[in-house]
Image (cartoon, rainbow, N blue to C red; front, side):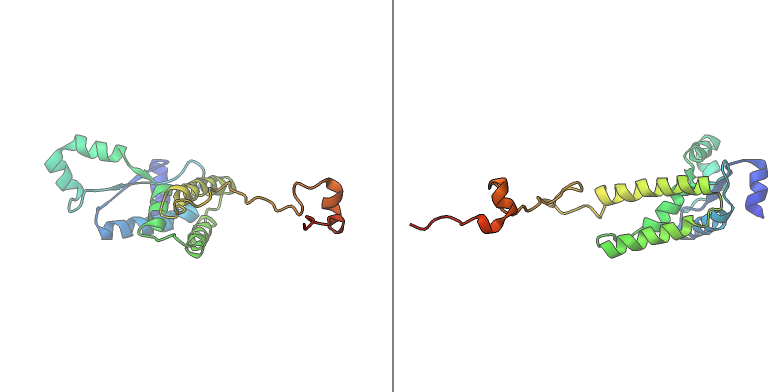
Length: 176
């Protein structure tokens, strides 16, 4: 109900959280609350305060301009969702990668609007690909690239077509 009330005031309200572990957990709960309510044009953005400061501390110490700057760097819901799912993760095995993709797919299925879900799917797919190509899941040095295909073995390669098609006709090198 609170998320819907916020959407009556703004299409993308900014939620402000403490920068500590408890603040991150509260933000993650807000993500879970919002996912099944998302609609095209309606989302949430997130601000995380510096560690150990509440909004009043920040305003007193650095002034309203610092708080406006922080609000200007608010993170979109999709970014906070992604951060939660990959935070501290080890995706060095196919099983761990598949588990991440399964978790993300399950979360995105909660988005009721098909078009919005399609856009989230694409966004997450791009991030997953970037993680696999440039993150922890990067292949070891010397490993073939992602477009590598092993050469196809052809029996009798280099022989005339008739012999390739009928290996029995190939007598092999003569022994002298």
